[in-house]
Image (cartoon, rainbow, N blue to C red; front, side, top):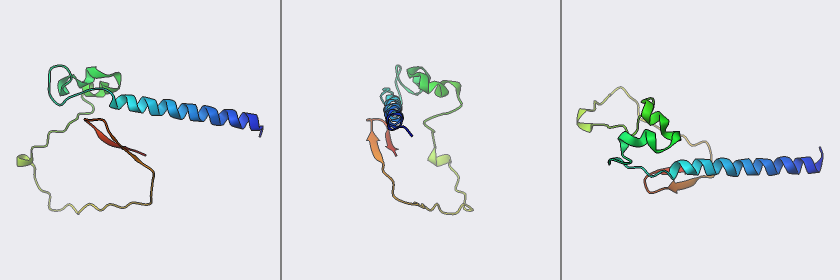
Length: 102
């Protein structure tokens, strides 16, 4: 394969990687709140085009779990974590969201 062509492909791939990483960070940059008239939960769908699902009702967050009304299912087995190996990851704290990017 032509070395110049390979270098061009690598450069394009790196630029696309940076562009997609920037788009992912933009999601965390939108200021929101869990209450309030401007950016509370009732307004999340209008805060960003990527939050449209909040407006349509297909994805709801946060989920209001009322512990006094929750029922224990004694037939469920305990959850076990099974890590298959080490992985690079970065913990992100935007002030309102904590996430892990791998």
